[in-house]
Length: 205
Image (cartoon, rainbow, N blue to C red):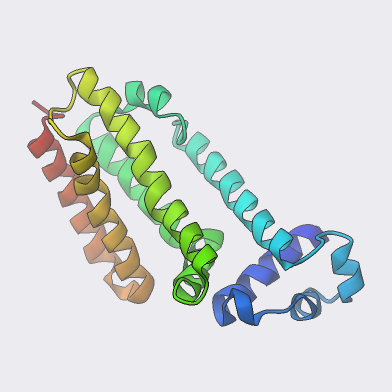
């Protein structure tokens, strides 16, 4: 691993352990085994490291989406894929995405850091909301909107339907963050949730 990525890895670990505000550039450099001036050759300040971590998370997500053979960001492209999936394949895809967000080292540590910081830093609270609430709801809302237009799903309120889908998944993710031993039960609940969503909104009708 090159020095730039080692800096990101060690910084993220420190952020998740101590909170973003309580970590200093010198500590990150010490963890990497370099001097602070050497770190500044790669990133101009702590915020630049933070932004690079988000970029790395996005890169990792794009790689995971390719593995799962979806776009992950373009809802119009993915609508055609989702509407033809069997229920078994839909459940498999749901599980794989859930497990990715739960166990991917960057996502797990970043989510922990933002959970710690959201009550102390208004800007980081907004980052938390964007990454784990607003962006997923926006993508899924557009995805479901396309599927409603195509007659695959049925509702008179796409926004509420999207909340019905995403809120339980977010809940299960945070439960597993706090109590990892509940993961097997959470996965079973995830499967049941997706099946019930299909029945309620008509994907399988």
